Length: 127
Image (tube, rainbow, N blue to C red; front, side):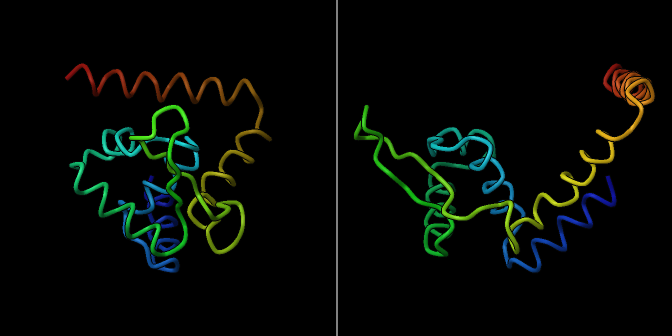
């Protein structure tokens, strides 16, 4: 967790985005065409906060707003950048490399580790 956090902090510094901006970009990448209300719920912001956030990201040219063709009262959000390309790939590089390492590991070892982590998490949540 510490290594992942450090990698994301470094990427955010290089990209000059704050934590909420980075989380919003990752959410929009995973949910193309999402509504601002869904982003608000995910980030725990107010509607005004999401409007400010989207205005800031749109002003940087990284997010676009389009009108929903089914409901013209609603905007849809999409990325104008590719998180798989530098410099933006820094936001997902650690996770991408981690997935590669886990994918190359012995499936039985991965399963045992996942079971152990599930057990630890259940123990903490039970407290």
